[in-house]
Length: 357
View 1 (cartoon, rainbow, N blue to C red):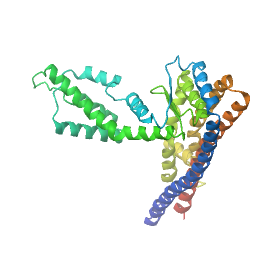
View 2 (view 1 turned 90 degrees about the vertical axis):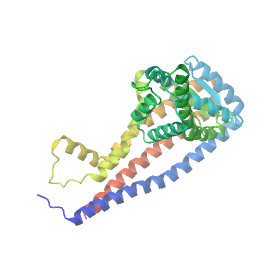
View 3 (view 1 turned 180 degrees about the horizontal axis):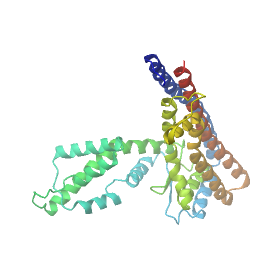
């Protein structure tokens, strides 16, 4: 039997805290290196794209048509400083899953039946509740709030047609407030970066590719590769979704590594839970890296598929440069994965050294 003294518990707490701080410190320092490295690659890519803008712009649109993405109802948008506000409104309207014209909203209207108009105070309260539920990722509560807002109770009289319309309008008004307060700012900032030629992205949800073809045309082929991945086979679609899910395991792996006591050489894990958590702790860094492999794989495949599109529309010299910059861009993701796995490994080691003092 092992008796834990207060000093033991203090060591465990201090060890876990020190490990957690070392993780964030390593991530911050590594992030600064990665940021500088990525900025330099982006600068070179932007200089190249600007110098070859005429040839790249034509090739981008030709490649988009030949890739089959247009027939799959994908859209390629040239986002510029002059039209980015217009693009923000377009993308906001399409990307907001709970917007006025979304399928979800139409289903909710059918489910609710009669509604009664809400007062100004009720509108404000509804908007506040919906915002909080979204921030806390309480999606079930979010759905319930919308479903029940303005709904006529059995004891109440049936609302008139004008009452239904007013009830629906107040809920839409509340959702619009959320868009303006939360989603709008994020989308606007994101597209401002695209308009400046400092980034580009593909949104499978709305089937949009957002890029400044004059300043960063060389990145368009990579984004088309993302679109092909998202509209490809079931396995490819699973990979696209899985890359976002698997990366969420890093905090879980870190938590187990910091909270799980290290086994002595003479101790053996007992039971499935103990064996599993012991394995995770002993291999925390490797597992953290493994959780980011789907992201690295999907990014790499996007560049490979983009290169196949570019090969059909670019001369060999330009193609070589485009492939080089897309590969360098991929290495920034690889560097991030190494920094994360290294930070987890270091955090667990520091925790164990202090806890076993």
